[in-house]
Length: 117
Image 1 (spheres, helix red, strand yellow):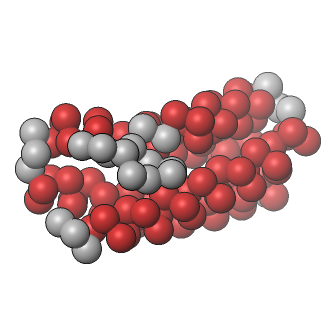
Image 2 (cartoon, rainbow, N blue to C red):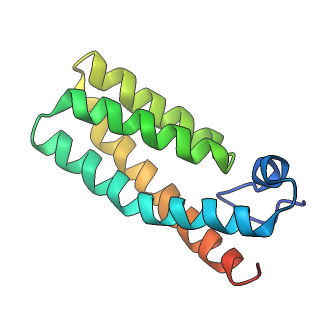
């Protein structure tokens, strides 16, 4: 499957689904439902100084974005996780902004792709 997207790459999704578009659709729909929660939870956890929860949420989000081969976003989420675990929260806000932007782009691309399945 060629990559015609800026934020996501569907090669891994194609591989793990074995071409089963129903399964692909299900994984995409789950991701699309999770994205707003990831972003709002991470921002809320940072604001409320719930740093352990922030690290866990970043870890969970990282696993989800890697299904769509969002490697840079995954690295940024890992960085957020590590900073939270080290209690270096001052460095996190711009990284959260970057992640939110990437996830917004991915959401648009995947929502459009769903209409093709």
